[in-house]
Image (tube, rainbow, N blue to C red; front, side):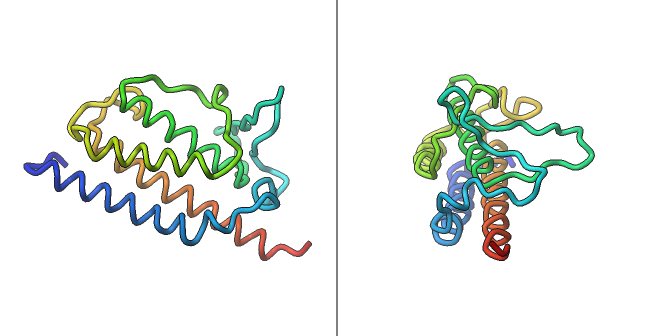
Length: 170
């Protein structure tokens, strides 16, 4: 995607982010309440649990024949974890493993991360090589495309869980 006009590429990535974020803010995040956050859509779930006073996520066995379904808490934790790592690594810091990341317990931190990420994209060199997030070193524009996709996927999954919960008796 190298571009003769990096500003155009940045604007495109930011517009994509804005579109996904608009869907999240208008149609998904306002529907999340305490009852929905920890609701388990099946008996095979990953969620977030309080361990030694910290909110920590289950990590699924990715080799299992039937992957566990995520709770909304797990999906919110997942967004926070990868977005926190993305902002950190793209700013010159280091990533933390999933077992070391404590969930904030709400949607507020995701909103903060969205603002931080957009500000980073507005000023960063999108051709800069980022090491430690993708399977191989990748330009920032590729990381940003992945962020947009991952956010859309996670927000859609939250919406699906909310719909299932609303349509489940009791």
